[in-house]
Length: 486
Ligand code: ADP
Ligand code: F6P
Image (cartoon, rainbow, N blue to C red; front, side, top):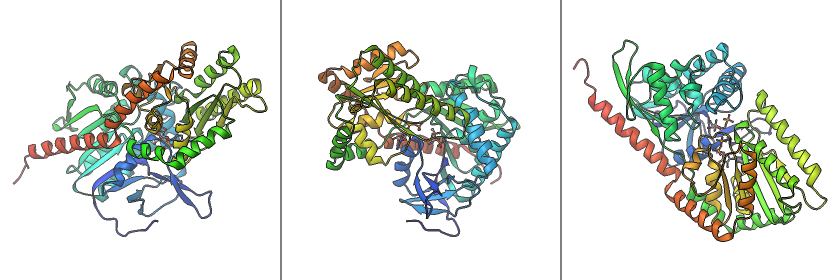
């Protein structure tokens, strides 16, 4: 249910992200709101649902203005994007410059001044909107690489606010970040926050190094003394890691329901009851290593290490950023290799690879996780990878093997997974085979250890840690501020 309110009230807690948690789908009649893609929404929506506050973000449609509205217990404040801004700020600077730059330059980042100009303009619009709706001394939590300039812009507009920033994706080593023509502006933009959170300690260390080398500013442990434009002390910012997680308890409960258990069994039947079901679930993105995993699986069939009819791979790929060249290319490459493997190894009653280019409701995802014997997470670089944690949360039977890339943030928490370097196809094949053949007792031992870890590593722990630290830092800053004139 949605309702519109005028004028927008002010809020003590504001979340900002490029996307709202829902995405406008104008292809339906009447147009509908559906869940936005990606891990950010999976992680932040449960946090928002249990607090009173507002979420500022783009509604997913271009050249369209929407009034603020309430949905699923959240107050949503849309920020409009024009078609040109969508091309230059979202597809361009966010996803063809920063995304590849921050993911180990897996593909070449493109640098265009017109894209940068649009990024600055859109960040300003977001900052102004949040400044309008934040109550005095409110907490504003800014998310992800699309909004890195917002923290400082917001501080300039509203120095009373407690400002937190969390980067959901990796932060690159200086040697890579240094390519960015606007590296100083981006670093200064983030430093506007009282607290800057990253997924891994290494990401936070890379950022602090960018501050030292790029801005010539010293850092002490996690602290950075930030100066204003005149060189006077402005505030102290802290950069450290807060690994994100999922709502593990609610997924665990969902996976125990009769409905999901029955659906998981039905999925296996519909797939022809394979002895071993392998699963991949990703946005269709070149960072996810989907090609590498399909190549490894195909070679295992070619070599005869896995017999035709023994194992089936299901690859679920959510459509993502579909107009960007590198995303068209990865889709083409994945679909071509699936076609080749099926052409060579499928029979009338057994299909080697099932490939679905869709997104599914949460229930269906939980059923797939419960149905799969082996989960393949082979990202070439990933800030966290929540899919890996979702698989573990759904394994209420303590069964199932997780093959996990060492280049994901999740590898630092799920240390009992079968770790792989996805670039090493021979090694990847051996690890996939060891997961397929893993004795039940070992599967159970590893899964139990990973589930134990997830019980304490919940998304609420993440948000409590981040927001608790932010509150403390903002309190310290405020109590240190002596007004110039009494
Ligand atoms: P990213 O943020 O890069 O997309 P994550 O693995 O961290 O990667 O998060 C992906 C989120 O999207 C997970 O919550 C996962 O369940 C969800 N997801 C991925 N593919 C699908 C799909 N085909 N249908 C529905 N949800 C999906
Ligand atoms: O953190 C990864 C991320 O870019 C998030 O900002 C977003 O939730 C997700 O991937 C989906 O990407 P997009 O918003 O470009 O569809």
